[in-house]
Image 1 (tube, helix red, strand yellow):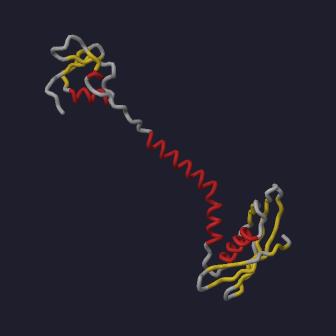
Image 2 (cartoon, helix red, strand yellow):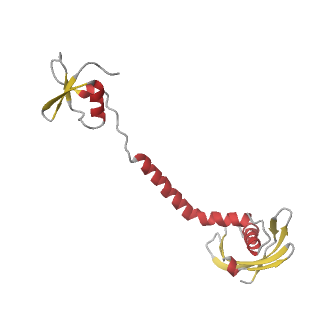
Length: 184
């Protein structure tokens, strides 16, 4: 609402104006005049603070949203760095749908991890190049995987497992086991 009244402000020892209320509101809330700036208009006995004439709106920090976005990106990057490889390995172990050496290898790892290891143990498998995969078309394979097992008690040792695998072509799914421990 534009007021027909005109006001003067006292800035740096000078009287400036005339200004309308919307103009003073803009100057105060955009930082062109300070909160302790005084205003006057004809008929007033003395100068008054402009904060009695217009409401001070808190300025939004322009760095808040970019700062929050940067923090979220950093947290996500840390989580991806920490859990990305584990998550990808888990996905590969459970999502093999082709009759390939890689498919048999990843599903054999899943069989060992979920059916052979004592509770609380953690295994760090060697990669596919260190495994032995013998495909027996049309639907079988024998996979020997190697890994380093750390028990719940903190002991670490190298182990190897031979896992007979079967591929169901209709369901496009590997199944295997039981895994048999062999000499590493």
